[in-house]
Length: 157
Image (cartoon, rainbow, N blue to C red; front, side, top):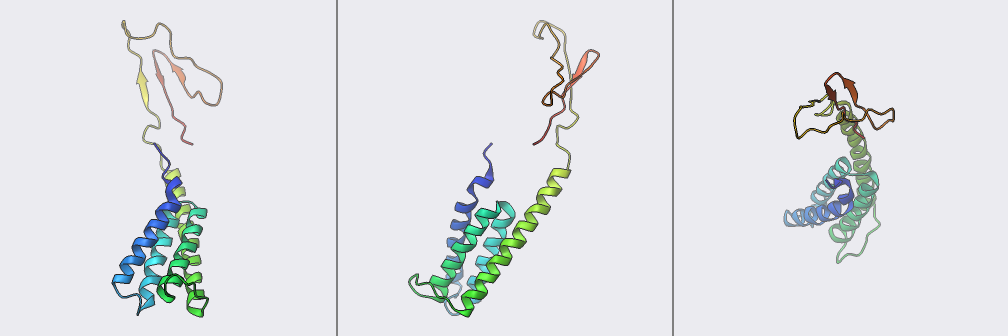
């Protein structure tokens, strides 16, 4: 299965464009707060589901879109007090998203793996191997011999 974190920055960029477009339809040209809230939410959501570097890149793109297309015209970046406030909002959304991700990740890592403690029983017959599964002393081998059955404990990285 692919790691969904690898697509964080492209996801963030596409979400910024979509949110800015929707905010534009709702009248963000007159009320810049629509764009600021929509893009701040995108940065926050990106921070929760992906890595901090992708979130920081998304925040920079969000600031550029807000500054160039909502506050400015035709993509000309504006360096005003309003765009400075937007930069602070996007930075705060990045930090809060990273903290939320850490708490979500910690909560997920504390929950037991669904296969933790799974036990398999060896069957006798023509389809079974002639020898029992190997029992090793290395870190990757967590099998222990228990009479005629063996248990496989999985290690989650």
